[in-house]
Every structure is written in structure tokens, then in C-alpha cells.
Length: 444
Image 1 (cartoon, rainbow, N blue to C red):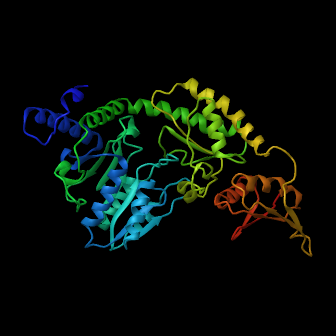
Image 2: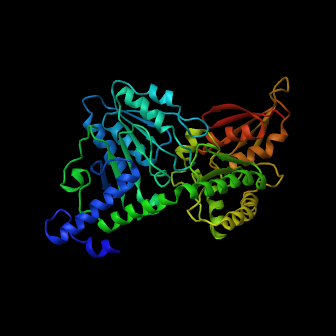
Image 3: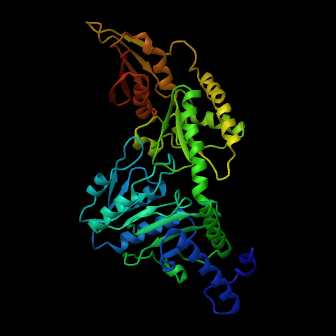
């Protein structure tokens, strides 16, 4: 409130009102720097976390252009990082994406192996925005430092729970992720890191974030970070117990569910699961009508009709994807009510798509080999969106003998994830794909 009254003036001016504004700005910077674990003069306030990432990546690459034009990122980075990487690639730079395992975690050794003499910058998030998996930032930062490559850490999801350890070089965060106001981000750049701020330069924030600082919002961002950190340890224990309950109870209450992400090395408040035979958008609407605001990484909720790049990199089921983010202070009764509502919501969506009926799929043709072992069926799901191809596969798999093959024709991008995931969940063999034809062998 004081910053609204006294933070309206230009902190770059020497008059009394400007000095008051400058004091508020400096105090906020010191508070934020203490929470981040850096020096106040290493921290810059930006207009968003996305702007912090874009500025950090572009400026670090420009500062080390004599070293090379290589950029290394993990395959599950936030879209802001991947967009910056794509812009770098279009300008002639080289980008290497490091794969992740089925939990969404990079292997430190594999990441270090991607760092070459021409690598100017490496990027690794502290924790994933969609599935909550924590990355081995400390190990990777040490290996990057040994290779002489600065590491930029996207810490937007984790800063509310504690500072990021290790020898990182740059770090970005976003205030709205820890309960602060939207429109404030932060960028920390360690002393000694080569950094060429984007032009045209400005006298604001050491030339790294042009424009008049929004001092009331900056003060609110720093105050909220300090406040949430004060109770972070106890709240993390409480929320982890609630998400652990959800991880166990959701598969018990709803059949054909895959809980994704690392079960142990994860953020305490994030849980993500996917449901077979469910349209993600329909399920989100059903939960919204029941009073629960959740999100999804499913292709069914994307205007591009492609699966989340995170789920794709992990190789897990994408259909019926639900991401739950428990806010600080959430009541245990709300979690129990969610568990009570979810089974009926999933059942309703499955019924809507005909997943619970025993009727045969449409456009099915038979194929019989000479020995009978390759007898099979072809299901034409071309032009149909998820979860229809998997639903039609499930309906006919019992119509072929054990050892028989079902070929599913599907041009929905999600089929590349969902059909192999279905095979693993139901105990059948995925034989691969040729174009839009996916072959599945019945094993039981």
C-alpha cells in the first residue's frame, strides 16, 4: 500500500519523490535477491517470466558469440525457452534437445555429453510446469561449469519452495507463479557471465529491461515471495501428503488411468494423470462445472491439435490428461470432494464417446493370413480425433485371436503417443507405425 502512495515517481530521478521510489525499488530487489540466492546487483526485474527467459537466452548467446552458436535445452523446457531456441535456430544457430526418461527427467551425463566446444549456453528448468518432475539442476550445473558453459535455470515453478542450489549462471522466475502479481518477472545474472543486453539499450535495470519499472507490482512481487517462503517448508509437507493421496486414490477410483511424472522427485503441489478413452476438453469442462479449475497438456485442448511437447518427450499417454495444481492453503475437504466427483465425470465422458459400450467399431475389414497367425483387422479412424482411435482399437482387439494383429489407420497426431501407451497399459504388443497405419498384436 505504501508503494502505491509513494512509488509512483521515476526512481531514476534525484528529486525527493524519485528517491522514495528508488528506496522502495532497492528494498524489493534486496528481498528478491535474498530469496533467489544472489547479490542484489545481479537481479533484474522484468515485465514477465517469459521476458526474463527471452532476454536471458538472447543476451547470453550474444555475449558468448565468439565461443560458438550452440544452444542446449532439455526436451521438456517451457515453451518460452523452446520458442527462443527456435528463433535462434532460424538465425543460423545450432540447437540440441536433450531427451528425458519416462518421468520427464534428464540424465546429467547425457546432458553433459551434449555440451561441446561450440556450446554458448545451456538451459534446464528446475521443475517441470506440467508434471512437476524436478530436474538434477545441481549436478548439471556442476558439469556445465566444468565444461565452461553457463547454465540458465527456469525456476518459475520452484522459487516459492526454496532457492535453486548449484553453480547456475542465470536464473529466471515469474511472480504470478508464487502468488505475486502478473506482469513481474525476474532475471538473475551472476557476476562474470558474458551478457550482451539486447538493443536498443536503456538506462533501466542496468540496460537489461527497458521501460519505467512498475514499482508497486515489483514491491508486491518481492513481498509475496518473502511471505510464501516463510511457510514453505510446512506447507510443502502438507501439500505433498495431499498429492500422494491423489496419486494413490485416482487410479483406485478410475480405471485405465496413468499417473505421470516422477513419484518422488517432484514439486509438492503438482499432480498429472491421463485417462484412457476420455476427451481432455470434455473432462475439463465436466470438472469445471463441478467447481474444479484444472488444466491439461492433452492434444484435445490444444488449438494446434498436437500433444503437449512434455508428454510427447516422456512418451506417455496424452488423452484425457488432467493437471492439478494445489494452491497454498487448499482444504483437505476439497481434495476429498474432487475424489468423489472425478469417477462420475470420467464415466460421463466415456459414455459420451461410446467407450463403455460393446458395439463394434465402424469401418472394420478382416485380413487372414495363410497360417491364421497373422489374422487381423483394420480399423479406419482417419479424420477422427483422440480418443476415438484408441476407443475403436479397444473395441475390436478381442475380435482377433491371440497373436492376431489389429491395424489402426489414424491421422490424429496424438495417436503416436496414445496407441503405444494403450498397448503397454493393456498388455499388448505395439509393432510400430508406417505413416498413418499403427499395428498392434494381441497377446492375451
